[in-house]
Amino acid sequence: MTRRTVAEYRRHVAQLLSALDSLPAETVELDAALGRLLAVDVTAPMDLPQFRNSQMDGYAVDAASIAAVPVELPVLQTVAAGDAGPAAFASGTAVKVMTGAPVPPGADCVVPVEDTTTSGDRVTVTRSRSVGEFVREPGTDVRTGERLLSAGVLLAPRHVAVLAAVGVRTVEVRRRPRAAVITTGAELVAAGTALQPGQIYDSNGIALATSLRANGVDVTSVSRSSDDVAEFRELLTAAIEDADVVFTSGGVSMGDFEVVKDALTPLGGEFGHVAMQPGGPQGSTVVDGVPVLSFPGNPVSTLVSFEVFARPLLRRAAGLPDLAGYEVRLAASLTSVPDRQQFLRGRKVDDTVELVSGPGSHLVAGMALADVLIDIPAEVTVLEAGAHVQVQEL
Image (cartoon, rainbow, N blue to C red; front, side):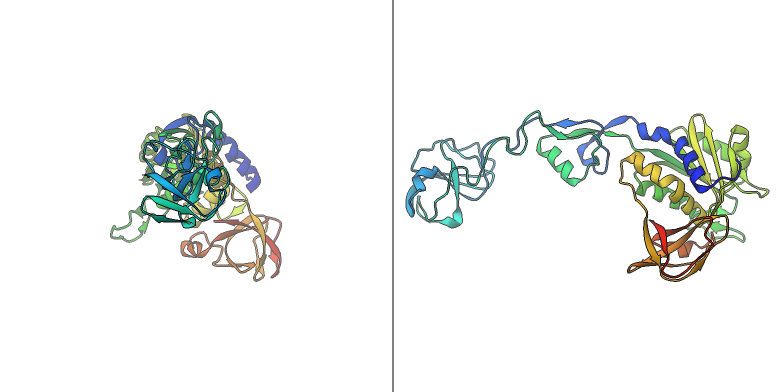
C-alpha cells in the first residue's frame, strides 16, 4: 500500500466494509429488539383501542340525561379494567367505570368521579358532559391493517411499547454486524496477571471489543496472539468463521516482529502508511471473503484508528445515527506536524475545546480524559487561540 491520505484510506475501508450495509434479517424476541434496525414494515394486527373504554375513573352515562345538572342517577353496577363489560345500561342510569374499563353500549360519555357525589347506589352528577368525552373509541389510535412501524426504524422504547400493545412477540430486524478482535505482541498479558520484566497489560483487546459493542456490533471473539505467525493464523482462521469483519492491533509497522504483516502479506494483505498522527501504519486484507482491518498497536493509535476509519461505517450498518462532526473554537494555540492529518485529544470547556494530552500514541490515560478528537488538516501547522477547528465526539 502506498502512502495514502486519511480521506483515501477512509474510502478504501468503506469499500471493504460495504457488505455490512446489506446484512440479512433475523427474527428476535421483542424484549431483545431495543436498539435494533427494523427490517420490514409492521402492520397493526388489531385495532387500538380494541374496544370502547373509559379514559377516567367515573360514571358512564348518556349525555342527554345529564344536560341539566345537578341530576341524580341510579348506579347499575361497577366495572373494573379487565372485566368483560356491564350487563345492562339504560338512558337515565349510570355505570361506575374505572380507567380502561369497557364502556357499555348506549353510554356515550364518562363523567369523572370528581364531578360527582354518591349516596348508596345513587350518584349525583354536578357537571354536564358532551357526547364522546372521556370515551376511547376502537381504532382511534390505529386501525387493523394500518402501518404501525416502517422498515428502517431504529427501535426505541416507544416502538417496542406499541408492538407489545398489539400483541407482537417477535420482530424481524437487520442482523447486527459481527466482529472479532485479535491483539498481538509477546509482551501482552491479561489483567490480573503478575507482570514480568518487559510485559504490559493488554488494553487494546477490551478497548476494541467495547468500542464495537458501543456502536451496535456483536463481538464474536477476542483473542491474543504472540509474535508467532502460525499462532496468529490459527486464531484468524477461528475468528473469520463467525465474523463479518476482523480487527487486529499491533504487528503492522517496520520492525522485526510484525506478526500481522508477516502473516497477511502472503494472503494479499496491503500494508503501508496513512498520512495521519497517531495511527499512521495501517493494513487491510480480505481472507476467505472476510475483511481484516489491522491497526497499529499503541493504545491511542488503536482507538483513534477505530474512531476515524471504522466507527462511522459500523454505526451505519447497525442503523445507529451518524455522529457528525462540528466546529468549535480552540481554547489555546497549538502547533501540528506538517503533511499529516493530526487527531489531537481534546475536552470541551464551555464553548471551546482544550487539549488534554500530548500527541504521543502511548498516552492512554490522556485519551481517557478526552471527549472529542480535534481534527487538524495535514496542511495546517499552527492555529491560534480562538481559531475554529473540527471536532468529533468520542
